[in-house]
Length: 203
Image (cartoon, rainbow, N blue to C red; front, side, top):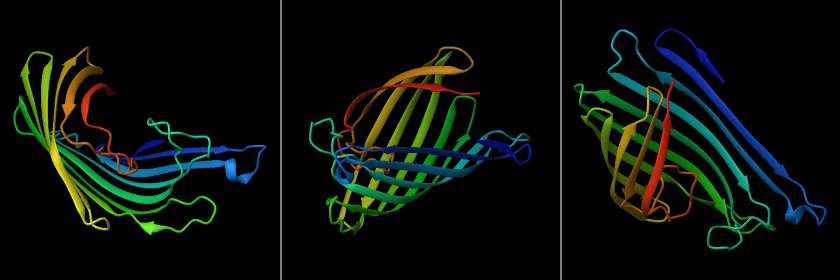
């Protein structure tokens, strides 16, 4: 759902919900909820600055038959609130700078039968630079830092990519993530290191 409050501000929301029921009993059931509400700032008079602020509620109880990429059971339960703000500013026609901050208040349990939740907080910091270096071609550079206060751990690294504008609405790119974490704080895996391909659409 999107509602334009005025020419500069837009309200956005999203709801994803699924429920899995098994004839074998409740142990094999699963539930997934992702609810998002936020505001987008795209000023008409000076569109060099664009911002997006979001609040996300996330709950995931995977069914016992659900498996991960490593073919192991996705047994943990996660419930989280995530606040994030993204911004990008055009310095010139060729250069843009941006950033993202996200904070997660989360809890995780590794026991489905008798769940005991422990805190799983996280802070994500991203600094970004985009370079429109030639007609229809862009490059992007990101520095990333993930702080995990409850685990007393932090991870950092860079991500680079190159994109080609296919037309006025789509651009296709590829790049390399030198970190092993995602900018999606609901993703608790650390298997994102390596090459990626990305298709971006805009209206």
